[in-house]
Image (cartoon, rainbow, N blue to C red; front, side, top):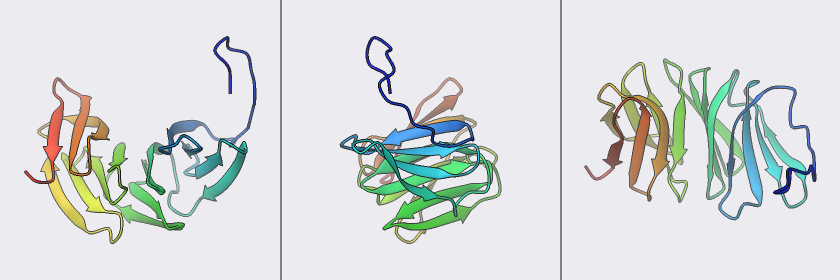
Length: 168
């Protein structure tokens, strides 16, 4: 951690692997980090220590993580979408690399994009059942952001941004 003048205040070595993505919880007291090793780690920012290491969801490089309402979401090169809910680690196995994923603000829904299939799929983090599938219309998605618990934005490598709703 550094201050505004770029002075080093605190230091912590998370992993020997490269850090690929990180996300804060709502009150910015905890940080979830995804690593090249496939590990997802939860860090307590107030006490400046590692809280949990989640190593049962992924076997390889993690592209993105999200952290909402005590639910952790991750996706990566092992074609898995990992979910930590109520301290249980689970994952969905897909057929191609999963580059992007996001959680709804309440953590009840997750969405991921499968660029090979050209889709974004919303599923329940409670039972992993699909809620809705969207055609990405030739967009190579790179980012997904939920606007609320039903609407989200998909953007990436192209000239468009798609606004999606579970109600459409």
